[in-house]
Image (tube, rainbow, N blue to C red; front, side):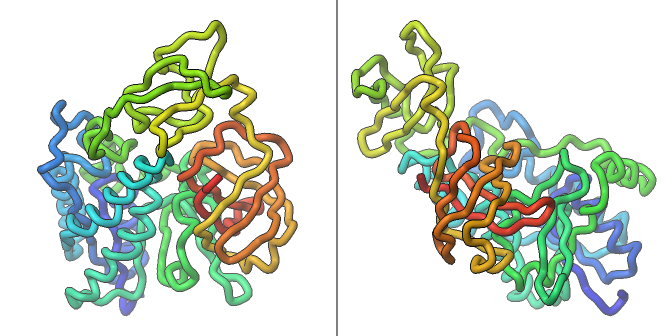
Length: 358
């Protein structure tokens, strides 16, 4: 593999570090690349909380960790400044979704448009050639009958296929996932064997190191909390502070548990109701990316995941199109949330996915 050059996205964490190390062992010509996205203008008031969030003031330390690992592996290392692109692609999207009463998923946006988009375009502009791009995601990819398939990682607790459903055939053809066949424990053990500095480093669990409302313009505008009849029963502190299905922290009492069942951005109000009103029998999904041809999926029974940690639910796809699909659940699902991704599976195989609109 010495004639094949692989650009490895290195975050400074154990997963991407071991991914790079495994590819070096396999004989690839490896270069490490890291995105710089943090802007000090957003410095959290509390100093940052989780220093290793995806977007936070701990980025400089993470970049230095990635550089140290690259030195250990004796591979070139490049930092790509994508601060402007991150602002436009991720943060502007984040604000726009909340302003429309939807719940954004910045990790999905970042993977699709930055890690597998702007970053690779920047490498080409800089004259850094690569045959393959690799990441530390726990997913698998294989070719079958001339089509590139995306599959869940073997470690079900770490599987990240939910976040990568939007990859195109062209992207899958040029991407390697060295950790797809490994468990998290095996990855940490491998890091220990190699003596990598990051072997015990904590994982990044959050999108932002501070209170994410710091990123929102005009946040904290009070408005009414109403029940399903339209009766006002309280006041909220800004719709961006609430999510579908939320029960705690509403600040109102009606004698029985109530949950957020709708967020009306146009009227700046929260609608609350009983638990049973949280469940939906169907949903609409748009902005689709199909890994298998949609013509093969009409009226098919599939499994669908509507959140990263959601247990896949059986459902049937109706009126399957390139850009929109109607989904009927076999059993009603709780808190189907506009703005989140719905990803369709057949066993371990990712069929495609899109964004929930209603």
